[in-house]
Length: 324
Ligand SMILES: [Zn+2]
Image 1 (cartoon, rainbow, N blue to C red):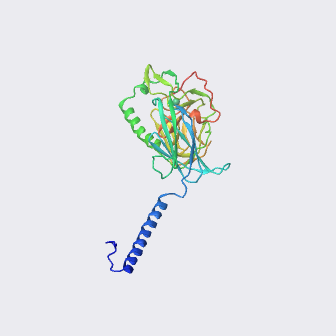
Image 2 (cartoon, rainbow, N blue to C red):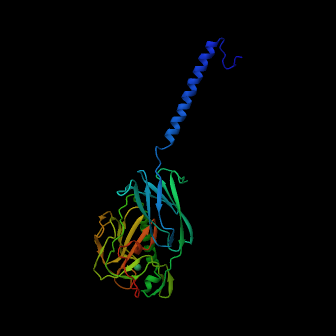
Image 3 (cartoon, rainbow, N blue to C red):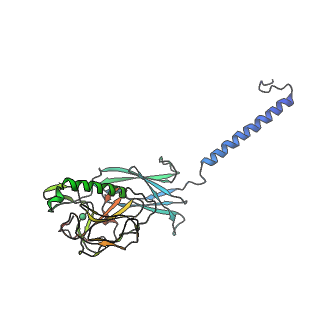
């Protein structure tokens, strides 16, 4: 029986048609194989994550990622994506990188999911392209503190509030920086040698009125004593603010920004690169304070966190007095 496909009148015509058809099929098939090859990377890195199983609100933690192939890794954390620069690991056959992450003060207890994926891969993580880790969020314990300061700092007038609002916009822009390079190193250096006079997270009551919790670490220091950068970075702000007084903000990359408040002098300018341990200003009592000290702050992906966790020789808390 002659197929209607082979319309030729003899067997040779049918054979010619058949061979043409087969050639076409081969072309289509090989094109399909080429597309599959293009769509599949030669070797998608296999990732592993080292992160804590739980974290307290406002407490930063370190995540270490390792991969068996080179290339950037992206961490998805609470709606933000952090690119982790990876470097060859001298001790093993692999690549490794670190990031600092946190949940903000007063974050709801529950579970957050941390995802690590090869840069360029979609968020939906498969075993081939990434890993996930569930991190429990628990409430850290923060004490309450009562302070007495000048009345204008508890109930500022409209001009002061307008000024504060304008400053907040500039600070927000500084904290929104996501410089891809990692300029920080752990542990970070204490910016002054003094002990802690006021902890991060204190629930504060000013002149009897509850106000926002303390979002930094107060360190004792003599007026005029040098204040040094906790890690390498780039100065993003160096200006006088209403509450914080003379303030220096340093961007350390990957969403990590440190800040130094109430300075009597600022010795750096925006755009300037600073090294870990470099003097950036002097201890003072500008802004809303009860005496000279350094208010040392740290932001991770825009949230204020407790810097004490990241410091070498975490300073002793001698409690008692207070500063703001
Ligand atoms: Zn303070």
